[in-house]
Image: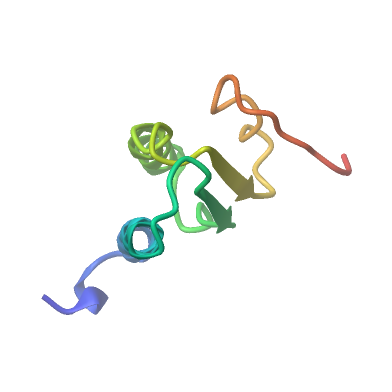
Length: 92
């Protein structure tokens, strides 16, 4: 199915899934265990609050595989979404 058939938010979800799969593949290829992390830059731009919550819920299941998940986002509600994970916030 062509990716264009999905909404922009759906396309973003597919891109996130591909990033996670690639990260896991590369970590396994290079035998890196326990110190892997993910960085996401503004991945929620095309998501409404419900879709964002669903994506965060899915990413929480990945927390055990990745020692850190870093979000760069202008969304004010992001800090605290991942309880127990430190966050920094600049501005405002």
